[in-house]
Length: 314
Image (tube, rainbow, N blue to C red; front, side):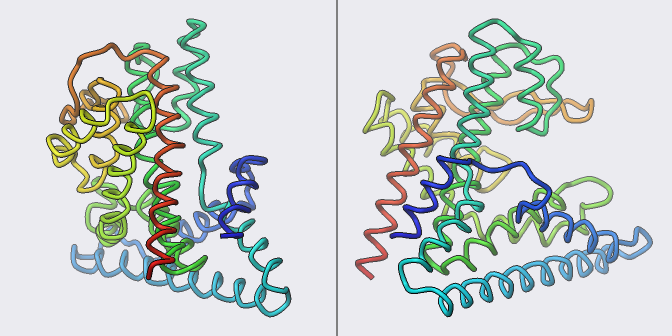
């Protein structure tokens, strides 16, 4: 528990520092090196799958070994309480509630002040879609979808694996997530080469995504949102999402806020359609971003309380 409390205190103080020495940034550079080493466009489809799988195996093994060594050193050199504090500092780098909330809030304020160009520019840092021509409502949708998805990928899932496997478990999950973000594409280069990374990410996120969905429903019940609608939309629309897990974070948020997510997005100039989630009962406006951030914090608290109870019960 000391580790968790320390992690949230450190995150609330410094957030997710943007530095080249951030553990995830270092991990990304390692992936990039191995990516170039193992990829060869002349390989057969099967060999490309094997090559991508080797990258995953090396990165995940290395991540677990390094974090296991770090934890062992903390336990060896420090008394129990101080070891837990050190672990909490490390865990803070593996979760991102403050940075996510800050990014969303900055865009909300730009929209409220009618600074659409600034909002488009800032949302481009947190989403992968083209943002230069987004309307104010589309900027809102992009932010809310990102807050919902990252509540799962960036907060609840790392904490879930921390409860299961300690810091090594949380670090391995972040490595899985980073591998997918760098290699899990369906383009010419990564359709086969990145397949293992994408499938591992689907497997690792299966339970955390559904826990996130339930946590959003609980958060809506505890706050100002519609928990009944959140529950209904999650079961109605979550499976429409192209990701087997993404809909379980986005659909309950859409229901809780009485908005519709999904629709047309542009990536590198190519427009694609993603199935709608939720009903278009209320307009997408800046205030909905504030409500989504509130849901993020409350859902995180609900998930931590639930996982703590299960941990102590078991």
